[in-house]
Image 1 (cartoon, one colour):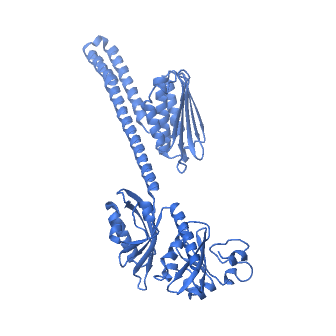
Image 2: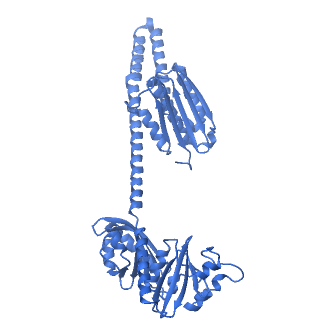
Image 3: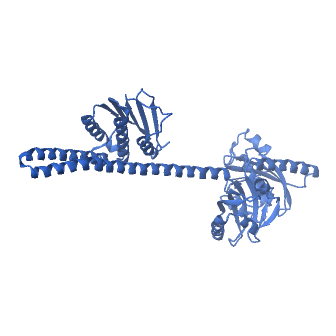
Length: 485
């Protein structure tokens, strides 16, 4: 700001507010005009000197939009400098002739914490030509520096004439058009908008400016570069109305946001691909499960029932051995009933009724009754009433899947299951002392694929630690709702 301001506050900056030292605010004692605006160009403070120099009282402008108050009379250069001042945290100084005021103005701007502070004073005589040239050169270099580190292309739009003034060559640098500080017809701008976006953009623009109440127009769309390729851009402009609330001008900037949009699109594509992978794995698992059940029914249970029927037929024909044949048929039917019970239990949803821990205990009891393996269960922090029913079922299915893997492939006689819950996640550890396997030479089976698919649904992770002859350890971490990684 001005030397008076800086010296009066001992170098302390209090942006967006009156600068208080003692007694009267310092900003009311200086001869320079002083005001502050936020990013929406709403005036937050307006000192007495500003009232005197510009002929506008504080009560008439505080809380109102700066550009609305001075619609049509503030030089474009003023907006250009003010806009760029928001992009940096160092003072910007410039001198400009304001035709409506018939005076030169010496202006200093400073941006901090979203508030732009402006100190200004009128100059009785225009500065010496050499000073103007030097300061103009310095300001031009500043413009170039700012535009080189941002993707902002400044413009002023005459909405009544349908003409857009492209300022400072931003469109040349960013999009390759050899147009600098020149008017272009609105039709040319429209021709650069991607055909799929054009109707939406024009509709949004029309609805925004026709109401007479909105002061900011903003939209994102695809904009054609000079080489024919499309860039993703964000346009943001401040609308200026006349006394009849008719939009007459708009001043704003276009920003190239291609990098951000491309990253967003890539992330969406990756999530979609992952979801398709999970869906495919689930469907494959369902088909495999159906195939296994069909094979079991056809190759095993069907043959047992055929044998049972044969014994019953023999009992009818051979009265002497009837009891023996009926006894054998009855035994085979009991076997079928037991096998059907096992299949039904595998397909059932146990967690919805008896809880996760009890369901795992029942699973262990059923397995150890028919298989020579010892399985230990350890739980911590598991309260069924605190867990969603779907979470309980998915954890149970993971345990069930891995225990089946152990029975089919591990040749283990001992296994251990640990289920631990804290505020953020459920951790599941299943280990066995079986033969293990070489992860570098073998692909994951369908069982592990199913486990990974279930974990992915929660944004979880699956870790496998195994080597030939060294057993197998499965670690599954499932983040709880609200704690996804």
